[in-house]
Image (cartoon, rainbow, N blue to C red; front, side):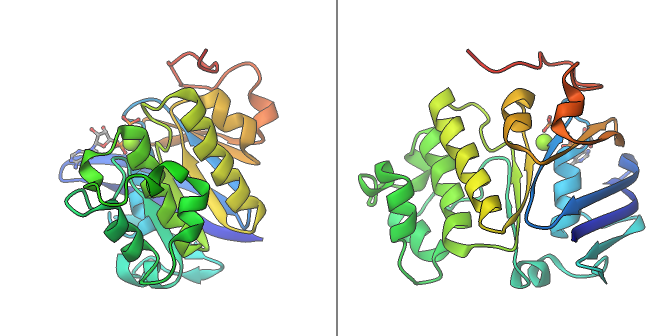
Length: 230
Ligand SMILES: Nc1ncnc2c1ncn2[C@@H]1O[C@H](COP(=O)(O)OP(=O)(O)OP(=O)(O)O)[C@@H](O)[C@H]1O
Ligand SMILES: [Mg+2]
């Protein structure tokens, strides 16, 4: 089943067009990786899906329904969650308050179980956590809200390999539980290892859509080395 379907998407910022007519399909309950070099338009694409950047042309359908004109808030209410580059946490609030907000007043136990280090940081301002801890806190939001569609931007950026692996494994587990996950990743090899489908963006256009196995010779348009971190 198709979760999200973008057709002829054009979007940008002022005079800059960042997406030049993108066609892209995201399968329901799967983990789809979105790769591409810096400035390719990955964040813009996630922002379009989340309703934060408007489409100048094209259409977005969500489970067959045209949501092109749906507000970001409405998409959140319908179960879409974007974990943005730079986390989307409340840096001035203690970890505990962040978790309370993410759990919508409910029990944040599932997050503390997944990320025990957060239990030792409950009173600490979220902004004073390490980069990896902040990313764990950001990912707690997905764990506690169980969105239908989860958009993850640079989840593992700048993290120690084992923390990155832990977060990617959690993304995989959420997909296995039925969440549709669209994952933007710097590290192509790690993303390809857990993805069901992959799209590669280059300069605002789709260069490749297919299965990870089809990219064994490298990712088109990606200038970073396509290998796992040592
Ligand atoms: N707020 C903005 N104002 C103007 N131009 C922008 C803005 N955000 C992005 N752009 C431009 O749009 C293009 C796509 O940027 P985008 O952030 O979507 O790329 P990206 O693939 O996420 O890159 P990265 O891997 O570096 O995060 C780039 O040329 C960028 O300079
Ligand atoms: Mg980006």
